[in-house]
Length: 439
Image 1 (tube, helix red, strand yellow):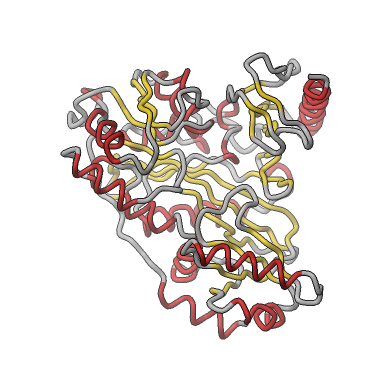
Image 2 (cartoon, rainbow, N blue to C red):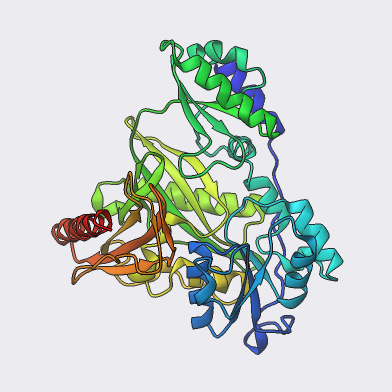
């Protein structure tokens, strides 16, 4: 598989960094003519971005397809429309000074066309830029870019012909992880394939056929025997320092998944057994990725720590990320605030320069819809956080299995307190689930 994989590195896409653009009101460069800023999307990430924008004196305008989206009551205003509604997009783009993304699952060409029709310069309106979103929304292109940058990642190969799957898997050692290059998240668009199991091949073929029917490439990764998953949130700004956009990072954290969905985050990883070299590698990788792709704002990088002690990049998300929600309570500036600071040209708050940044313990627990529970209504039971917990609720009116509904944050002085905090989280979640099941 090694020789096959190497041939896939040749077509990596590497983009130049974007240049510094306009900034917010008189505090910065005067190119923003209004305090209204746009968020494309209305889910929980948009909600938390809007809340942070208000704290900075901005007026966040949400573009969403439903009037009761999670972000609706955190926004200054709401523009309704789908991502295919050119007229609604034009109205939205004409109104705001800058547009940021809740997620990368967008059609960049449609957005560019709508921006031009609205009389806006796409290269100045969107942050990150559309070329950056286009490059990073494709995970196969991410892998090729990482290889070009010599940033360690798991071996991979594009699956052009699904009939080759048994041969590809055998060359990789007997099992591979199949992934859609686009539209995969929270465990969707991912399938484990082991040719030694007779029932695996039909499911793998259907997986590939479903992707190819949507014009989505599929690639196979060698299955990594990892010790744990780690993650880091980085933020790159548009404010120039010595000619280069500044990049700051939050501490490396441990991320635990359940069925492909982030369940809990704990940190700092350095205080929980991670090697100092791993944090240095993560910080260096973040700076390389930001420079190569022109990233602007917050972005998340997920890693595998292998049993042999290597650190491999798994995926990159060009936006605020679930593994960074703990920053709302653990640091003076959250990933959401720093995201706005970055795209508007404000100075970034460097988390690692805060006193005790790598000693302060913290945790986050995602609150997911329980299995076999599907209910709706405005009077749904809310979790009751313990004395050391902070509840961040998303205001969704429907609960379904595995749906993200909110999260708990907390900080602790040391590892012993961290264990107590995690237990507090678990008790809160357990009582909440029991209340839901009585509805």
